[in-house]
Length: 350
Image (cartoon, rainbow, N blue to C red; front, side, top):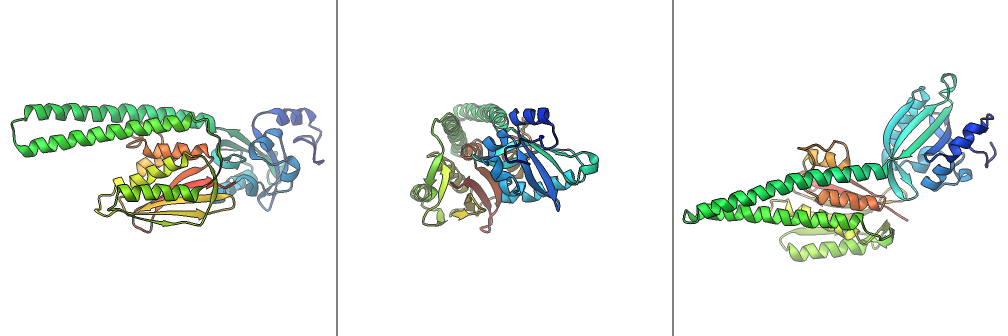
């Protein structure tokens, strides 16, 4: 195939090639070599989305171009299904010219008698739709549920305080403490909602920054504000990533959560910056506190649906997730060797 020949023209399908070349979905034609998809041709939308010119992509392994290293097993499973002649539909994350984005993937093998030879991969960008839908649902669920509950606590305990004003001191103390906790939670929820609004409506363009000074500033702030906490770092001299000034908001929220939700008198926190797979850096915020509930993690990562009773206990992790996604990055969770959580912010490198 000539390097300027669009998909579909190799066999004389000029009309179909013209259609594929001008649709908005990214389309790749590939051959399967030992079960591995090798690019035969791409359309204009693929070039614009993933940043590879047709001539540069042709002959390369598709997974090497656009599948993040940590998602290769998933991609291999999809390739096996294509090789077996199956038409496959699945939501996937792929590495674009602007970082990670979510797509509806459709793997379409050639006709049955050629299914093991290759086929087509079609990527429909879902990022904007999925993010907007989930943001609206989370803000609706969390704000309605949490604001209502905290307001009810304040009202009911205020009534108790008034009724028991002349009662025992212990009862008054408990009621006052409950009101203070609820008021503090409401204030924090309002601040997080405000930060989310600022992040999502910011005009600031993603650029290249050194994330190490940002991490140091966040850590030093929390060392001053929480002197009982032991906050360690493991940082390189510098690490360039694609982000904006909002990165400090996300990291501040994670370190604050690691301290705030740890009942220990001396919470342990460790912040590490690690160069990962080619083109990626991960900031680890680790602690020795109680594990983040699985339901909360799964809702935030998208592994579980948002429901009236399952939407997360607050907006802190959503703030981090949506901030990182504006950089083309990803939020994920694991266990730390400190005994608690390892919350990971994966960022693209320039």
